Image 1 (cartoon, one colour):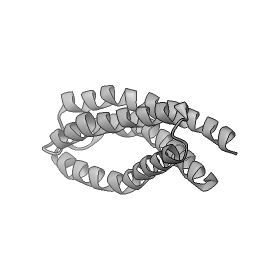
Image 2: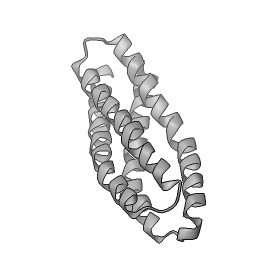
Image 3: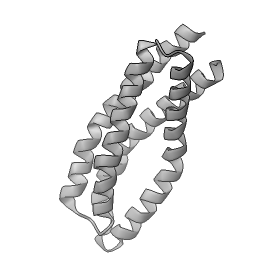
Length: 140
């Protein structure tokens, strides 16, 4: 089980780092992309970002569910997987539609909303990453 906990920890911390980079550096840089090339940039951004984050997000989910199956009474697992559910909901119900809107071309309102609505994902992923450290302590 230790390797599953490690995979869960690594995925949580990787995603916490990625989301903070996206929030502080990447999303704000959208304003600097040439408007004539923005739709192509956004298409590339979506594809390449998916290659990086989807395997890790799936690792978070699968390892978390496996740990929960192994230890169904662990309250901490229920809490941090609940946070993961909120992250996924925000991602697929808010962020993805905003990226779809930006696929048509730069839209300042959509870009600002993307940054504003990304803050909860930053804090949720950070909280999850911190919680997973406690899983290491308890399962070691």
